[in-house]
Length: 315
Image (tube, rainbow, N blue to C red; front, side):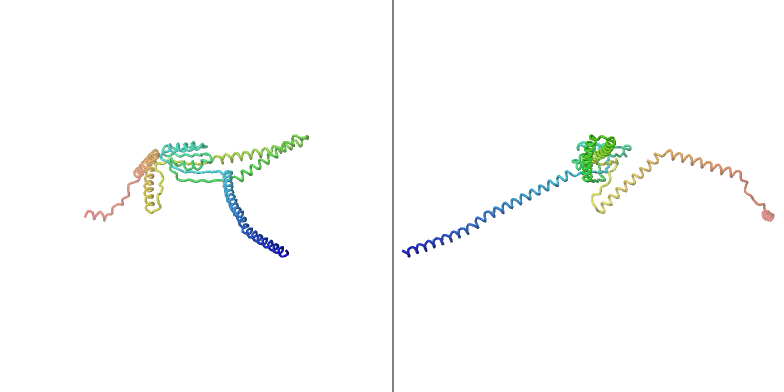
């Protein structure tokens, strides 16, 4: 009986040991599988989080850059020097481009006579249309020189705006104190301070309005000259191109010089006529004086002949 009991106990212990080993083996093999699942998911989720964060960060950076550009207070200016053979068409083209851009001509002047006129224009166009208008102004004329500049006044603008806000707050406080003041001295002092603050507020408001005007509408200065022949534009950098340019320029210079001399003579014909008349009068007077002087002078002196000379002559 004791042997049977001990045998059963040994068999139970052996089965328990085998079950524990199998469970531990299964647990060891299952644990890595269970751990791999969450780790892969974590890595994948982490990658997605990093990717989403990068995209979000890049989009935020783009928004910041755009907001900085949009929020910047830039004053754009341009200058164009051009010439045209058809002056009326060039002027009409400039006016058309400004109207198309939604701008206006702030100032214009046309001087000279037909064939030698020149004009100056101060164009104001919206900031969004500056590039397009700056390039399109030269469509109906020959551009000689083109320049542009930009001025960032953001610091001054926001500083003036902050000062204005602070002064408005100060004004409100002074008004509140003025309502409670009872003494005449206090009232006079508060009104004096209020007038000074209000003057500074109006000055800053004018500065901000001027900035807004210059920022919202860019400025383009155009100088247009009427010419008979357009300036030469060298197509390539070579000796023959330089030679051709020099020959054409020299010929044009000679023609212009001859035309200038002829025009100067025609314009000043009365002056040259007066010079000719004066020269004739002076020449006649000098000739008359010479005749009078020669008539008043005694005949030239001739020495008497000697006797020897006379005898020699008779012989």
